Length: 286
Image (cartoon, rainbow, N blue to C red):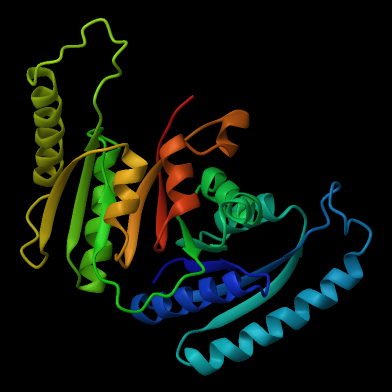
């Protein structure tokens, strides 16, 4: 199978959860796994002058990872290497240059402050990578079922839905398609206290979700249900994914400095996600 599953690994508990997830996926998909430790020698790093020590530390961390991988997934071909530079830039560049099918990173799940600070690398990787990125929270995965995919009615959402269908088929689990809509603010000039506007907004969201599922074609092997939810998109996806095996979302590609920024929905989902998330790069925007 073309491409590899690349894992950004630092030996932390979150990194170990991400590596375990990648190994289980590789067993199912037939991919090789490429484990990369990035020695942060970027100019603004506190360890800028400690490259030799970081190299040795990375080698020790990767040796432990290789031992664990061999014991947990002996049939998966695993390679590992230490590279130097800025973690986000290096992981994104390595994933693109090697043609990785997926880049996997861990994400800490403690209090909100720690999620915002210690998960910065995973958020920035998800924002700037040109390959699909899996962000794996440090949470139990047993007892979960179902794949959740969020769509927004745009044509680019078709690619996200197609990925969700493929993941649900691979896992042999049901697919939950979520389309969220919100009420207009009271300050809108055309605000009305009747139900006609709200009914129209809900119907538009329902028709958009239905059309997207129809464009995806028939998949009789899958159980597919569509949820049209009155809620902010990020909140609706987080709620729907509480017990899911996987959540699939899209991130619009950007150019220039904006390529390092996630949209508000993707950002909020990744900060609060209750399950693994695959972030799929969709059509580039300016």
